[in-house]
Image (cartoon, rainbow, N blue to C red; front, side, top):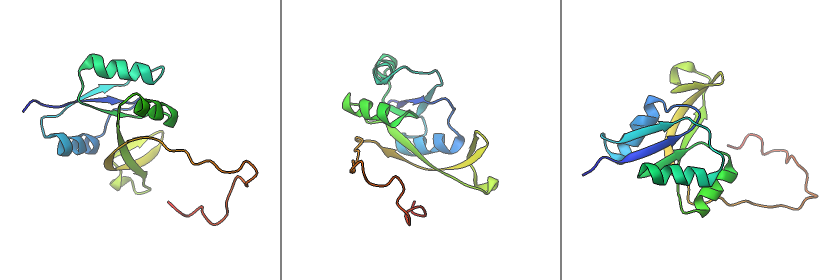
Length: 130
């Protein structure tokens, strides 16, 4: 079986826990190709993906770009993380904040939920839900 090539498209490099997570999905010989260069739009990401002959994609991008990627036929992996206060539990530090890698999830599409414009901006009592 040929090793899978995964394009990692983000301004930061993956931490070891994220690389290990990809190895669990694709096998220990997975090739994680890091691209920290900025992109203009979803079409540019698609071109890089196709030109590089990648098998999969992890992208950190605005939700509108991820939505457009899905509409172009790509279903990228999302690296789910959570902020942690205990630095000993952190897998990486980004802009001074400490994070722990949780898992990968496949993005199948983005769905927006619209509400009436006259509804209040902040709904009290929901701030503790995560």
